Length: 466
Image 1 (spheres, rainbow, N blue to C red):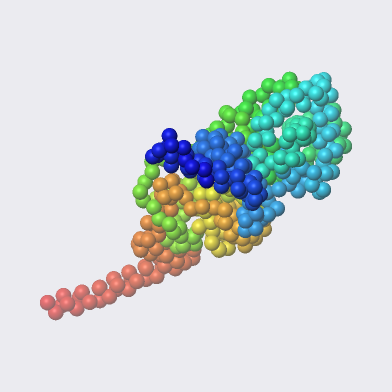
Image 2: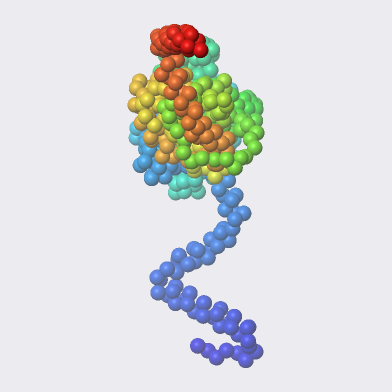
């Protein structure tokens, strides 16, 4: 190494020595070609390792691929489309290609109806293409960015037009309107009333799949080009109605949803009620049969909001829980969204964990069904139990200071009191059957008569003796 110049001394000399050594080491690495390109790449990315930069990047993402480990422990088919692709994550897969023809038809019908050229729709989506690309956390750059950005915009226009035309077809079917007003043939396989009714359940399932979401800003842009300026709340409401959900709006419904799964989640969770945190909590929750044996009664609450759970005077009130063939897939996607999206709450995962603690066996499911808490449309109570065994793998226990956490504590406190169990046992044994109750009353009367008879026999004896 060359001799250090004399004008460098002390700390300055040490800093210069480190600088020269680092440069010498880096050049040697570059010469050997061992990991020089990686070092240069990492140096260029150092500016991005900043909380503000990273926070902005995470906030742009809203559509995710579900990690393989989550698919392996639940139902891998629940998160991806079976019939029609929306967005880039499953676009072009062989089993989804037949619907591409109908997407092109949707574009043609929409532009013909509003009398605008296709280029105006393309230009509207091109304006927000960067925002749309950023919404996908695992977008294939080579396939959709750079020189292929135009292909991305084309796909978004087609998928957006398809979703809007499907929406209008659904409204026409609900209102029993002739679809010829939408310039579709009455025997159209997709957009007619008959086609919609046949395909509704299948396409609805695809529309709420986590990996098959479409940013709703696309619909807003396309509607504006076609001359329809709908408010965010109106778009959210129509999509919920299309998905078969009563649009009982929750928090944030005045803002345009990220995608259909987002507004589906908000509607399902409803509005968060005011709640004062408590330090009372319990980890264990007795199952439905145990609660019944301790005298707890079950009552269906008036609202469908999952926050509408309460415990008072020995009565556990819960919203109706409908179980059908698509319930498992719906709930898995809602919980996956909570799991993957940093800004999403965990209300659904809490609620599923809460219900799972109550339904442990078929007897629990049957009891809740008999009390009107569960509407079972899948056949057997065993299937309900099996469904919750799958759902609970993505669930998480409610926070101790949450409303559900306090309900668990109150239920436990009730069940731990022996007098509640004795009273429940007495009522179940003697008061649940009118014949048993009648027999008990008769036996009690006979006992009283026998006692009185004994008293009237003994009293005269002691009176005479006195």
